[in-house]
Amino acid sequence: MREYELTVLIHPDLEADLEPALKKVREIIKSNKGEITKEDSWGKKRLMYKIAGEDFANYVYFELKLPAEANNKVQQTLNIVDEVMRYLLVGVDEKARAAVEEAKNKDKEKKEEE
Image: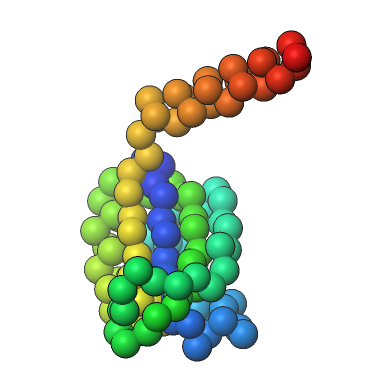
């Protein structure tokens, strides 16, 4: 299974009760044999340009693991979910992740030395 990052923009009218929309996204992932390792709601944010006539969207970030063949199925299903305005599903670059961790460790060591 490969690791992915998924950012979903959910319709701003659903801000009061995001759970049903998030449940749909989770079910899409799980029905395609995926596993969610992290979920983080970034809240309601202003968009750079209007999407479906809206100026705002609720951002939710997921880290997940999917089988290679499930990637397209998840994307096709997210395209037709009414609550999801946009999404971005990208594969995780392990080399970049390792470089970020190394930089964090170096910063931590510098602060401890001071």
